Image (cartoon, rainbow, N blue to C red; front, top):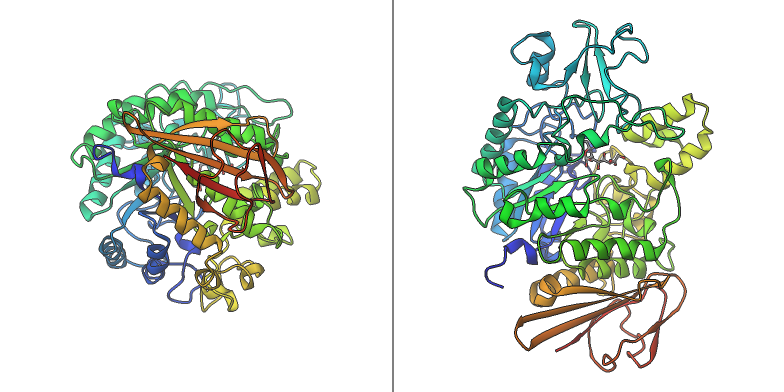
Length: 574
Ligand code: ISL
């Protein structure tokens, strides 16, 4: 596999700097905090670190609203701290990729300030999407927005600027105006900034909502879903008309001079398998892999993410299998259960009760890491961290949750029901500080954390788990090691077994690097809190047990084996 790209055998670890480790006691994680904790990541064995944004920002959306692309927010440290971190990461044989947020800037970015203050006809006006009010309406009044699109963070996707009498587009918050990628000067400014970071030594980018940067310039009204307040503009900006042209251009301008060294991953809400195959086809030279969203949308009800519904295992298995198939011959998957936008994996897909949480976290990790693709471990998931016990709306910090609560309650929703949904799906669940040890504030800070630590840190923490070979941490370490040593994990093809089984997740990986030289892996996992009978496929009885989260488990016998709750195992035969 010498001619395969390095990132096919790599595992990426996502750091949300605000919540990782605080070195100076101000309650917010920082770059020096990360540098001090690198040993944890070395022991875990990950290959790449992805840093969520650390650039100067007003922090309306925790740094996803950037006011200077070429600096470090004082909250996180300095450029010198960054260079030190990067050198320390490289010295340990790891790589580091930056978050690239270029669908939008902060409204405090100088580009937007000039665009706004120059007024219509000003030289920087067309760096953003400015439009007059809908004809026949009074500008600045409800319903006068240029179109009916809703924002991802509640309310309209347009903000009125009284000075010019025009509106600007913001798919996210009003402090995150969308850049106009139709303007070639915008694109060149973005590419120049990316080259600047590559020259500094970074190893690639995770590209925030990159499939939203091409909009249909007509900006037509969207359909209003039943019971909805706003139109759905997604047909006009998800994988818009020029998206492939833009990404190919970015590849030529920025990535092509660094063949074989970088990792590029595009975050792509709403992307289809067919589109993802185009984006990740190496022959097209766009991006290495994409983050897809289907598997994290299966528990959304008709009302969206804050209308959660139970997840059915056969649907989750089918979705994952379809992506394995669709990006099998051409393209590449990225694999994740969680990130800073999603609830905690063990609480969402597993069973976070004290009885089952270790085993369910390790079962989920086993299934994920044994799929074909590059796995992403979100900070704390290697410890099986759980959702947080939010008592009231005042415990939330995330603007998405706060705005959703304000908008729904203003329209007459029952606040208790809104709060229940936020407890299940709210992004702050994943943003509580990393639990390093059992001391006050979990060893995250000596000050007062910006978001309280989860009280379960006395049970769930890195210090305890590093000392326990049966922990979620050590199970992740073994899974990551397996990807490095067993080529079938990265390169084998994928066949789903027992698709309709409500409790068992079973699949085969088959790798044949040379004719007749076959290695096969069989993955069996019980994704339920009850024992489950699992038919054993022919010819696997007595095969090598490569990895398990239940060392005392029953041998694999024909015709069936009973798996204990959340038991997961990987068998190998050659
Ligand atoms: O969680 C979501 C809102 O319901 C997602 O739709 C999320 O907004 C989407 O995945 C895009 O996320 C990225 O861009 C956002 C930022 O808030 C997220 O943190 C980031 O991951 C805007 O920059």
